[in-house]
Image 1 (cartoon, rainbow, N blue to C red):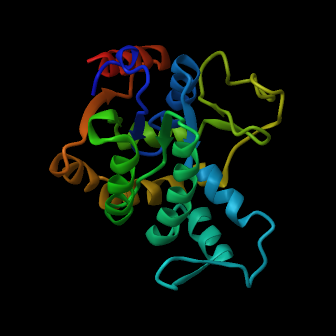
Image 2 (spheres, rainbow, N blue to C red):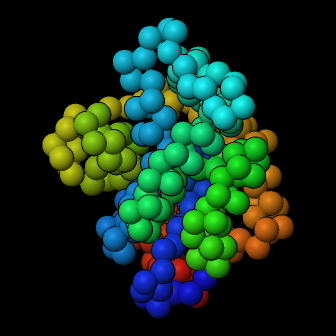
Length: 239
């Protein structure tokens, strides 16, 4: 992948992958603002799909299989990855819209399973070309992931993630929009441990697949300060 400053006139996509608490959302927000990317937050798209859903509401994908929205919500709330065919369908539909608008995109939260990767990556390659797709792997330990998740907060209005620092520990309102900061059920320690197992068992196999299809993956030390992680991401993109 060329440095982003050399890619005028070309669409490109960045994918940030890492365990819960690695800083995917925070770094995606920073990068989207820095180089004018559309931040595609999978969790937000999924949550929107089942907001106000009734028990009988479902999405039917191309092969006729039905996925009931409230069943997917139950998986999500337990820290379990939603059904990969359902996620792939929802994500691909949105990405197609963005590509048609010539948007450069950054994804945080997709793909999360090998099934989803095998559905999504050929689709992305067709829209953006393999050489214009970069995967950033944010690496942190399980101990650090648990520590971060159980202390971070999220804006209930705009979903802006607020990591725990000396400066933010007493914040009650979102520094971005003024919305109320909340602690998600997903960030309780027992749920975080489930999510970490899901990441190791279901997401990590994606990296072998990326290598097989020629997608560039750059490892980033996610245990640094937010500022230093961001600097390393910009350096990785320039290379």
